[in-house]
Structures are given as C-alpha cells and as structure tokens.
Image (cartoon, rainbow, N blue to C red; front, side, top):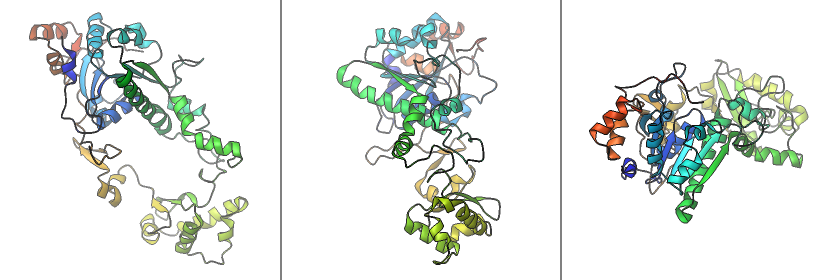
Length: 404
C-alpha cells in the first residue's frame, strides 16, 4: 500500500504547498488549525469519525472545515487504526485535539506514530495541556481564559466579564499557536529527520497573548481592575458609543493629535474642559458621558461621514454587514464559498499567494479516492466499506459510541 500518493496534490497554491498533514477530526482549535494550514497550501487529509453529532452542524456545513479532503475511518476498529498508521507513515504532521490519553488508548498515540514515522510532528491542542493537575479535566474556551487573567481584564467594572466568543482561547491561544508550533517543528524535522510532540495548551497560548498586559502590570502602567485602563474601555477616547439609531460607533483616538481631531469633529471647541479631561483618568467618566451625549444625537451612518479622516472612529458592523464594508470589499477580505460568505485566507503572500479554498467536504466524500490513491484495489475497498471500517456519504454507518 502506497499511502504517500494519497497526499500527492502538487498543484495546490500557497507557500505551504507540499506540506502533508493528517488531521484527526475534533472540535474547537483543531479544525481552526487545519483550516489555517490548508488555506496556505498544505495538503490536509481529515480523518472524520463515523456518524454526526445531532447537536452540531455537520462538518460540511461549517466553513472552518474548508480546504481539506475527508475520509471517514472508524478508529475503534483495529483495521481502522492500521489504515490511519499507514497514512501517518507518509505525513509530515498530525494534528489532534482530544483530551490527553485518548489517542494512546486507541493505539494511535505518539509512540505508535513515531514507530512508523520517526520524523513526524505530532501536534496536540488541548485546553489545559498534556500535563498539570487539570490536564484530564473537562473544560471549554471560557474556562481556559478565565484562569489566565485574560477574561478578568475584559469588560466594564460594573458588569461581569463578557465571554469574548472563543477568539482568545480556541482560535488564537489554541489553533493559531498549534499552527505556529507545527510549522516550527516541521522546519526542524526537515533538517534533522527527528519528529516531536507539540503540546499546544490554550492556557499557555492565552497567557502568551497577555504578555503586554502582564508587562504593564509589573511596571505599574496597568491596574489589575477591569475597566480602569487605557484600552479596556475606561478611557473616553477608546471604546464604543451608542448612536441615535441604536447602532454603535467605535472610537480609538489614543494619540493627542487624533483626540483633537475627534473632539473637533464632534463639535467640542478648544476651550472646552473636555480636552483636559481626556488626559486625567480622574475625569474620564465625565468626559465619556460628554462624548456619549454628543454621539447619541446622530445615527451611525451620519457619524461615519462626519468622522472621515484621522479621528480613529469606525462603525461597529454586524456579521451580516461586515463583508459589504467598502474597504473589505476592495481587499476581497471575504469570499463566496459555495454560497456562503466567509473570510478569505490570510495573510497574503506576494510571491506565492494562496488560492480560494475548496468548500468543506461532506465527511467521507474522498474516502474511496484516498484509498484508491493508496493502492487499494476494488475488493479491498469494498471489504473496508462492508466492515464499516471506512465510510462514504452513501455508505455511512452511525457509531454507537463517541471518542472521548
């Protein structure tokens, strides 16, 4: 069986062309990492599990699964693990997002994978990490960022900390950190021929994202109190304000020259005390109230027109509105992917730009093609399908248990 040909997609555009990644389907940061790598040209084959969780969108409905090929393999069958290990033998990296020990119990842990591919980069992303007293505990994004100080620092002092979606934990602290770690380890593996485990913990990544603020706290430039600092919503020139139409305007005029332009366009004269209030944290509440009163007199669209220039103000757009903003339209920041508007791959490369990603595949859509590329004949493929080891959309078996 020649598993290497299963990864043979030399014409994929992007700077990661030629990188072969095996993704064990999971939720949260794992798929986000797989999307980042696939967006930039890596050939990512996703091993999906049998069945669909009725409480979640199917993988093909979630654009974060774009750009990969999918084979559905029952990893609770011995033949399923054998098939996965054959694919591991010709991958440069494997990424997974289960609790510590899950893949080891299945027989697909680092030891088994390194035995067939010593150069493999084994990328693991979890909330608590592979070690520590909470490593085997359940949790989600909000729990992980709660213990890092990140959640405490967000929001106003008069309200409970608001959940920042799953941007800080799953996506930035988890998926992006895993992608960076995998690429760093692949660079080393290509030089040394030795693979390694990449332990990407969301608690580590979210803490890393807070480096600036821990530095400012140590230097006395940051108060360990929510809603009392320069860029956490306390300063009247850095925050959001409701407009007359109930929509919101974001203001970020930190530097004095931008503050002056903002106040001028809001109609405050140079002699108004509010100019001095902006420099004095003791007067920030009063200044914020004064600015809020003015912004509440006009609609968001009116303020966007009036504040054009260097006032550092922008409309707070909804998910439905954002793709149609003139600047984002000019940059093609969003693209139409199989009828869905979705963010385009980023960042951008001048010499080897990434192409538009393929839509998320139906789980198992590529099962037969991948098996055939690996050298299996029709009888062997039919045997795997008949045993429920491998599934296709037409012959999908629902597993009575889930991998946890």
